[in-house]
Amino acid sequence: MGFFSCGIFLFCFIGTYLFLFFFFFFLYLLTSNTDSEESSILVSLQAQLAECQAQVEHWQGVATICELSKQEELAELQKQCDQEIQSLQEALRETAAQYEARIAVLQSQPSDWRRGHKTVSAPSRDKDQRQPSELEGVVEREGGPLTTEGYFSNCDSASLSSFSMDTPSLPRKLLTQDDTDSLVSTGTLVPEAIYLPPAGHRLVTHSDWDVLNAQLSELRGEVSRLQSEKEELERELETQTNQTHKQVSLMQSQVQASEGLLQDLQKSFSQSQNAVQSRLAELSLSQRKMCSDLSRLKGEEVEESISDTSSSLSATLHGAHCEERLRIEIVNLREQLDTHSEENVQLSTLRTEAEKIQARKDQLQAELLACRTELEGLRVALTHVQGTNKALGTEKAALHQQCLELRSQVISLRSQLDTSQTVQRDFVELSQSLQVKVELIRQAESLEQVKEILEEGIRQAESANAS
Image (cartoon, rainbow, N blue to C red; front, side, top):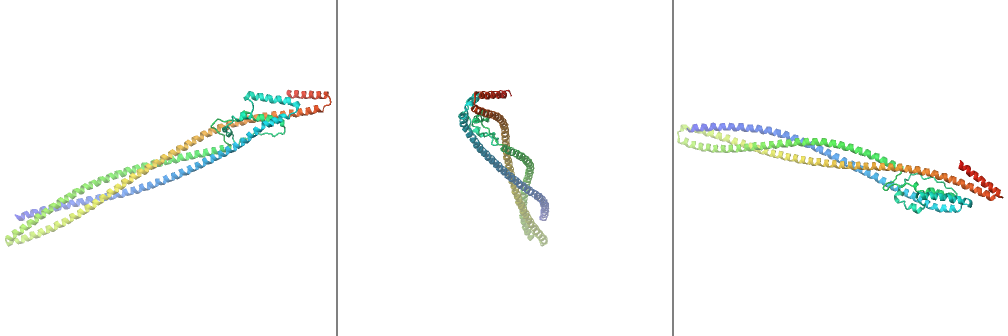
């Protein structure tokens, strides 16, 4: 009976041993497949991480180049503005000095007119007095008496600074006759001959006008270049953003897959560990039972006959053999436990790598946000440049309008100058003829010669009026 129970026990032990062998072999195959998959996933993640680092370095280089180009353009624009302001200030100073000199000349002309008026001879004094009185009447009808104080009180600093530097000065003949200075001063002091621009406007020279046009064309070219660069950067940023989003989504899916794989591996590891521990407990319990059965069998064999000694010895040897097998199985189970602990360490390493990948992903998102902020700054700078371009366009239109008005004023001044020169020439000829007649009258010896001279002068005057 005891031998039959021992055989049943040995059969059960061998069956359980084979079951455990096949179970652990299957588990080993499963873990080797998962290790190969995890290594391939890790290699792909490392390659994607290197690609993301290269893209980040590329974007950093692009941002540095954009910042340097923006600083150079701002410095160039600042330099151009400083040069323009300096040239305008110099033109304003020269214009003010020129017109101060003209004002001094105009102020000195009334005294010359009075001196010339006193030196006119007696026969021509009545006619000279009649002509200035007519001129003064015309001036009084147009705008009141011509006094330098009344005229220059209406000229402010804005009107003086509004004259152009390259405006051709009015040609003036420096005649030696004192009796013609009154007409020159009268024609010069006409208020309609001076252009008074509206407040807030200024006149510039032709060279400054050409410089402004050149600067405007340069600014337009700069704006078009900046706009093309902006569009190119926007296209590149959109492409890189799409690629980054795709890579981030792919990395997220890979991280989620690796996390699911880690969870499955942890579950399988915990299940296998529990199964191994339960099996070890069962094996230790069966070993104890076997030891007790062996001790009991040994005691029974001593009491039985000598014929059963050989069978007990074989059973003892068989038990020792089973015990050795159990020890070998325990060693194998311990090795499997060590293998599972190493796999746990690898899983923790993979988890750390996944955390690093997540941190890198956050860093890439932050850099993408910084690039977007830089793009917004470039858009603001482009808007500012466009506003400056519009302001320059309006200033150009205003300067063009002022140039047209100035040309019309120059034309009117030239026509008035021609009229003044004609009047001056006629007056000089008249004064010379009167001086000749007076001299002839002085040299006349009789009243008949005086009458002939006067009649000849009347006939010449009538013929001149008729012509």
